[in-house]
Amino acid sequence: MVGVAYGRQLPAPEATPIAAHARLFNYPVKSYVRSAADISAYGIKTAFLSNSLAAYRRSALLAVGGFPSSVILSEDTMVATKMLLSGWKITYCAEATCYHSHNYTLIKEFQRYFDIGVFHAREAWYLQALGGAEGEGKRFVLSELRYLRRHAPALMPAALLRSAFKLIGYRLGRLEHYLPRYVKRAFSMNRGFWN
Image 1 (cartoon, one colour):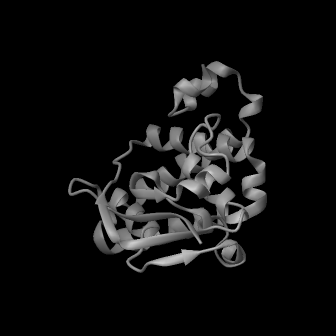
Image 2 (cartoon, helix red, strand yellow):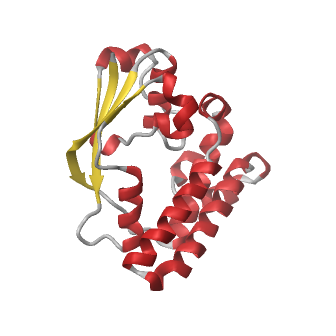
């Protein structure tokens, strides 16, 4: 039975080519259904979804404890992973669409990926259940470079720099327990989390 369904996010009209690619990469044109049996094939992407356009089966959400209040971000993905591990399915409905994209600065990309690293460090069970994230990161970078080569080749160096900022932010987030709170607040997109 399906526990959560989510739709396709399209790049907003003002999206940069880099922001547009992120939506095209993560939200394909073909719908699908994922279950725990798909983890070996899709890894961390098995539980991918976004709250921006999602509908949760109430009984499934309650069965996995609802949305956690103690995570820095990715509460949607955390719930989806718990649903998968409890036998629920995730449906991606490409026909349901919304415009949703972000033209993040380099600093905001760093901060977002710092927060993702914090989430992965604090919720180690998540990566143990689904596999690591870095293989997907490499796949994204290669896809982005191919996309930019066709649509905006002048942005390829900026995309590589952006990827470096993401990786550094992510790795520092994974090591957050070594950092003082004021550094974590400075590095984080979700600064209120550190209060």
